[in-house]
Image (cartoon, rainbow over all chains, first blue to last red; front, side, top):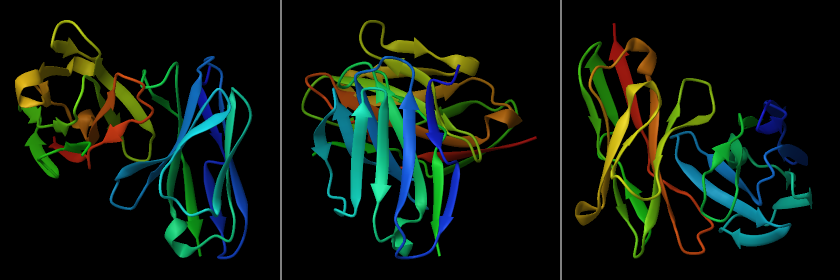
Length: 112
Length: 114
């Protein structure tokens, strides 16, 4: 009964590669998010999608692109990976804008 | 500016000690308030939340938090900690009017010594 799931859990790749992280929620929530947790544990929002529309886009490089094929999925695609992209990426969803946020298990990305 | 301040970066307690973690937020409207916990190597789990009503909210595992509107605070408390409470604790808020973001504090690492 996983509410918010992410794959893969771990991702190790080399600089310059392109990679994707997938997220799915089975809660029927309207809004999904991507957060980045850096090495100091600080959590910062990257994107959110509400009804398949991007509604906020923080100052992240355009190498990062969210893609939402439907309301239950929000994937994160990263082009030309850099060392500084190494972090844990969390997907989250909420039933409405600003409602209760539930988080996925995270994807630990390591760029070498 | 919208922000969350968690005053303690790292707290070390012995088992059975009482816990209080400070959290203050800065926002120009009404808020929903949250405490999340992240156990080592795990994802974020919701401890408790405040949306409206009684400002003293109770969460899982014996945690509670009190919303004091005049102080813009939402401190987390537990009367007697256990070794298993060792984790990172994050205070967060979202605005209630058309909000589309959850703002996090920098987190407080709690270490409980058996």
